[in-house]
Image (spheres, rainbow, N blue to C red):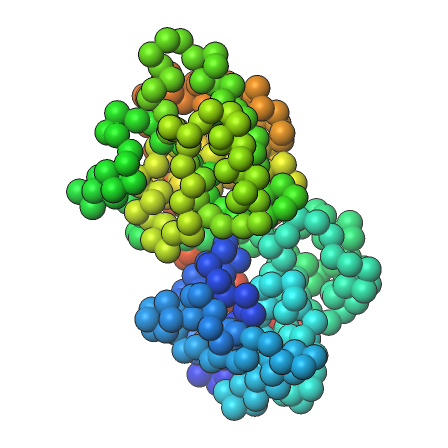
Length: 381
């Protein structure tokens, strides 16, 4: 199959868990960018997904299907119907649970549709995918760390595996605090002089995003801080998940009740990110390439993060943030102390992060490379 005679690509982006995480953000960022570039794009999501209404409001053509049905046939039938109705050329899946349904839908449609999947996870796929995924689809890794893991794990034509970084519309993010952002800080109960450290992300068992280690480091820093300094920091957890009770108990046990805060899922990330002073991403499990780090840089915020997976591809130690060993609470506490002690360094690191994201991680980069991949796939398979 080749592009339409007018050169326009017809693309179906599929996402059955469109509820607001980094994968969903990138699905929407890519769909919007492709549409802006003149391609014909449709987005298929499960009915009732948290971001379904948001996608429609932003002008995307959204098709929904029942979230739960016997053998997940509603999803499969829905995609086949969309492929045929809109003469889809590229079917692009983002969540791991959509990989094989996308491949099956493409085959059953009888339209010669090419399948592209994006791997947003750092660990290798299961055995079946290891042997057959590259034989059925082109695979995009979101970081060099993921690409290396996939090359070690996947059997089949390696030329079907490539790496494309995530991208942001950097213009949506604020580099200086507006009156609205100051109002948001006050509404959250944050004092003007407080330096607010935040972890943004789900906190599901067993590790979350390192929220427990973050709290332990906050407590250690407070124990070791000079008299009078311990009152200038606030520690915020933003997100949802199964570890909530454990985190609340840990806050109580560590005596952080006056300075630690849990905030539910936030829709307006640019405002939240501008209100923070430092993003902390202390993951201890696996990390492919956290989008939240790019969002912090786009907001001119410095980052403290684990030296894990694809994180060092964005965070340059002592340049735009600090890297610490995963699970190393003393090192994390030390990094928190440095950020508090040196306001000028925070500003310098934030500016470096902003420059870096504008040069390497914009939605324009993401869309340009993905369009080139689509055309390559349609031309050469």
